[in-house]
Amino acid sequence: MKLTPLEIRKQDFAKAMRGYQVEEVRAFLETVADQWDALLKETKSLSEKVVQLETRLAAFQMMEKTLKET
View 1: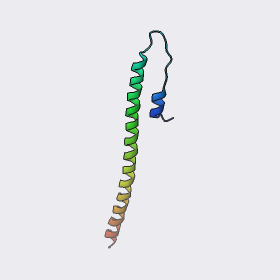
View 2: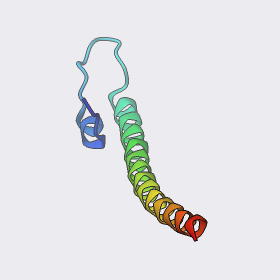
View 3: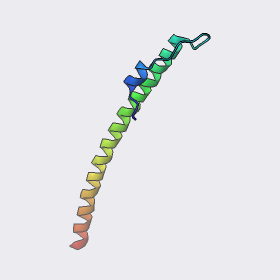
View 4: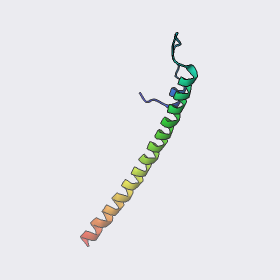
């Protein structure tokens, strides 16, 4: 299961005596969600770049093959 930034932001915890500070937990979850969102965007961007570079590599390999054959 993939965890999304929205799921992190909406995560709730049960309240108990002597539990955690609710606002502190909320702030931490917001920070984690923001960083997770940034990482997802970076991963998508890098994946797209890999595809572009693989396409260029294939084209250069074809040119190299053509040059070797001539």
